[in-house]
Image 1 (cartoon, helix red, strand yellow):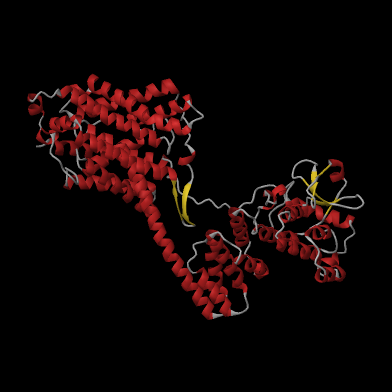
Image 2 (cartoon, one colour; image 1 turned 90 degrees about the vertical axis):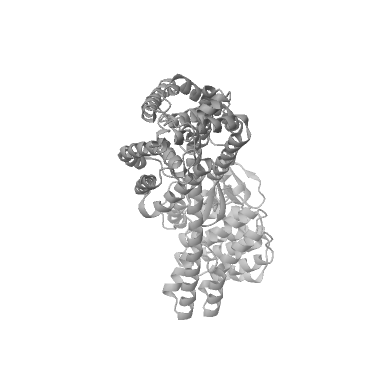
Length: 615
């Protein structure tokens, strides 16, 4: 009987024994971090620079008012309206004299701002619409203050239009921008607005901002219009902007918003044209509008076109979902590769069942945390310094393990399993004693944060991308060491025929130590990468030990290429199973698959002769 089948059957017993442990561990494990696209639709700068403050960010006009918000202004309106002795009938009928003045004269923006307190709510909306179409940079700030209840009329003569600051009693002149004393602001009277006007102001603020020189602000305004279900009322503003827009991304968004606004057209042909424009869009607002059209439009041809467009969009989404699962599978495979590639050296080449491999990963993660505490202000530098430091620290611990315990147990895999399991418990307790049992936070540099935005349904996290690249780099580096260096040549010689290598003068004892140290050092490097994905604690290595053994056995004992294929294959298998079975059951199914596989092919996908095969 060869040693490889013996080791494989041993692993089968070990894997089956920890099956229940896997269920508990997987149930408590942290879920994978999903790439979620960030919708940068809020216009947060204050009213000073014409921005869109957080006070009117709520999409639901019917939301409960809160203190200091625009909704509070709505509750204050009744008092102001009574104080100002407004005629309620003016909410329905505009002042004919003011409307006639607006139509027959063309005042400048200053005059329009001064006219905001005049007339009824409808008059106020008419003035706001003209301000929004003016393109004046002051307009977003003025309309925002009006919607927030911070636009005041001074009690001075001549009166001035004032903007009260969101916090405090200070303010500024809405026309000139000059600072106004707190006493003047306190004596001013708020220009009243009601809910219909406030809702209209949201869209008008977005319309006023689509002329901003900042492309991102223009895009945010268009996204605001899209969420507010842009109607035909904003079409003239969008049409006027079409020929002026120079940014390709913003123009695509502008075309989409314009098509959504035309979906309310009376002419079915215009609705069909809009559906054709929206056919390739992946935005959720577009799908919602098309669903409503497909189920509620009066024209059967329009309903059929909307349904066809939805089916086309769903097909594209399915393709991107597959791409996303593929990426997450490769990402999970890269984590498995980093965790298992060191074990491929210690177990695959040396035949040692190292149950302390997870603790070597933990040592690398704690090394990363320790270096970050030494230079907390330089995250990028600390993460780069942690890579060689973790390799050295974990490698030295591995050499100490090999020289102190493992070298006496070669050829007895079950005894190495028990001995290294005891070492793993000692290392865990040592970490608890030195650093406490609490998890340690490891911060990520900016270039590891965020996501690569591809489209509205697909975004890839930068941390996963970098770890995938890092795992491939580690694999290539280890492959070069094993194929192109003197150490690699000696390791392969000892693995294939230890007596012959010793006869040729190879110091097999030191080769064993250096080989074990190399595998342990790579495990430490894996800990650096894993510290960016999960909590750093005494038990973090336990989550990867069984997975590492599964990868090595599945790929082929002692074969680095088999480790790569096994890690990526198992990672993708798990991620494609999870949407259908859940994370826990997917992990169990993969474990059962590995157990059945090694019964049929105990040498793995890519078997390789070595010391264990000839024992």
